[in-house]
Length: 163
Image (cartoon, rainbow, N blue to C red; front, side, top):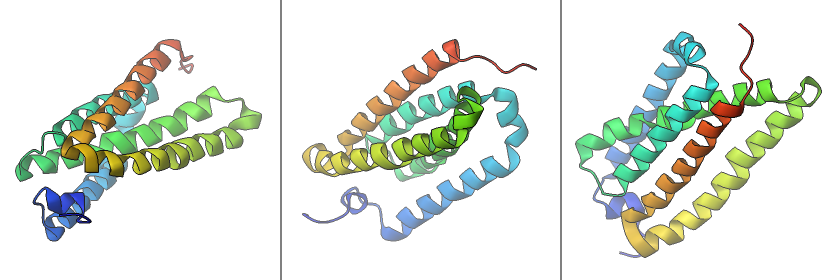
């Protein structure tokens, strides 16, 4: 059916899409509220790697149209693919940029990651989904894999803070 949202083409009702979205938000809030000590202990480099792994797993699984019960844990991975990587990115930009350029560095990071790159990916994803259906999520898994490789390289090269 042309013009019908991807969620409905995969047989997921509007109400269930709302529940899945709400579940993702709830898990994300819990992560940011309760996991702060753990996040600090893990450090931004490893948090970024964890987010990359979660992204590869999440998007690959979505490409194979998993059953509804599996969508809830997969949706919970949004906590790592977004919140954890966002917080890690803030910390890394703060640590790696010169103090006099910290604000500009945060603005550039935000504009690229939250603006330009997500905008381009969104434009491409619609056409990709129309062409290949749920298998289009494999492109997102590939992007997550590129980010994962970059985060592993960063973890090896980034200067560690003094304790």
